[in-house]
Each structure stands twice: as C-alpha cells, then as structure tokens.
Length: 246
Image 1: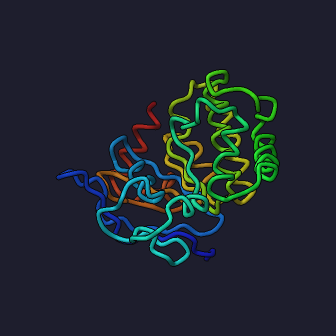
Image 2: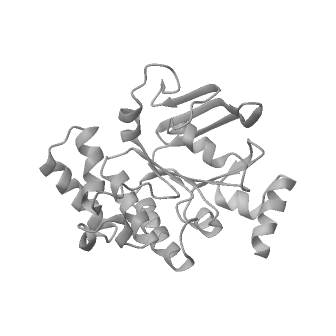
C-alpha cells in the first residue's frame, strides 16, 4: 500500500438538473499512474476539473493529504501548485514566449525569483525536448510541441500529482507519440499521474490503475491486467470491445 496523497469521497457534480458525477470514490497513492477511461460524456473531464478546483463540486470531499480542498477558504492557486494540470487545448499564453509561459506561474504563485524560475523552466524544457524553442511564441510551434511546453510548465511548479485531461486528443496522429513518450518517461521516473485518455495502449501498458467511468459513476477499477484482461462488468466489456474493433 503506497502513501495516500489524494482521496475523493462521495463526490457529486451537477450543472442545473444535469447530474454529471454521482457519488465518486477513489484514491491516488504516491507513484500511481491512474488512467480514467470511458465514452465521451461519462464525466471523466468534469471529475478532473473538480479535483483541480476548476469546477466546484456539488457534494462530497476532495482530500489532499488529509485536508478537504473542496471546502471554503482554500487557496486554489497554492493547491494547484501541488496538483498540476495539463489541458487538452494546451492553454498557453499566446502573447508570451515558450520560456515565459514556463516562468510566469513560478514567479506569481511560488514567488520564485526570475533567475530561479528561468533555471527551473529550462530544466524541464530540456527534459521535454523544447529547449531550442524558448523564444518562440505558441503560434510558431506545432500542437505536439505546445503540449510538451504545457507539460514542462506544469512540472516547473514541482507538483506532487499531475492531472492530464485528454492530452493527445487535439493533436494530429503523428504528434501523439511525442507527447505519450514524455508521459511514459515521467511514469517511469515515479511521477504520480491521473490521466483521462482515449489512448487504450497507454492505459494498458503504462498505468498501474485503470478506472472505467460511465454515466457519471465509476463502474469498475483495477489493475490494467484485471480491467483489460478480465473485466467483470458487461458494460466494461462492451466498451473495450468497441475499442478493439477500431
């Protein structure tokens, strides 16, 4: 049993009368790579956005190291420096260079000096292969390169957990591999990751936990061997069968 970092208890989220998440329970231990799979509209991205406080949960608790961050009075920016997020659409600042994108959060939230922020940014831009592009603006680089910058930006904040929301779905097929390779390296280095993904090979080969969601609930979870090799529920079997046909 690993060291418990994040625990979600009875989490629910509604938008008006539409209940998107219903009584979600799961936990993340240090070093876990958890992939969340399921059809579009099953609540996966909303779950991630609730965990990162981009959406306010309607009910339940999100415990980060035992503290309920879904309660009032939480410094969301400070919390997000521990629980980083990489978005589907990159969310880079278009008026800033690659390097500036990776420095701004460190300076504003972590109060690092410009020199310290630059050193940290360069360390991770080198790691993801984007050091040659530090003076480029986002419009001058490809989608795959933008996503690698977004990963470097998140890593520069020294997060304890990284959340990935469909990090490859906005990319052309030839760019998917370059982002998945970076994510696989992070997993091998022991980074704790929670990944919403349609990339079944990543979920099967890189994760140590897989969560299948449908209709706003967690239908089944387990190791990749259990979920892909011997799913217990018929809806899980049906979902995986559709992917095998594609």
